[in-house]
Image (cartoon, rainbow, N blue to C red; front, side, top):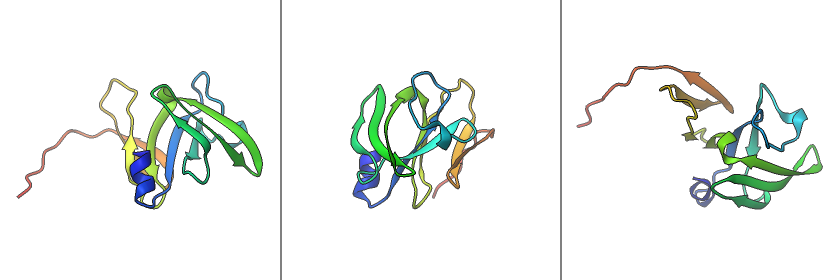
Length: 117
């Protein structure tokens, strides 16, 4: 998703649950237990995306900071310009999650099918 967004001129952002053990983000930028991180090539220096973690160096209010985020704490990724992306469910229930206005919103809905002609 990150690569596809960059290739299409969009700015990838990840939503992180900052309450997970091992998350290293600037605490003053955490709101409601979450932080939104710009992981574009211009914002995230030395970006490393692995199956286990996301790490990079970035500036927050002009101050350099080494970010390290375990992959299990990543709630989703989306394009800033469109708000479209993917939310990762860590729950066993069937909660539907959407990204709106740079916030993660959770709503429960019944599954439904739509006929496409």
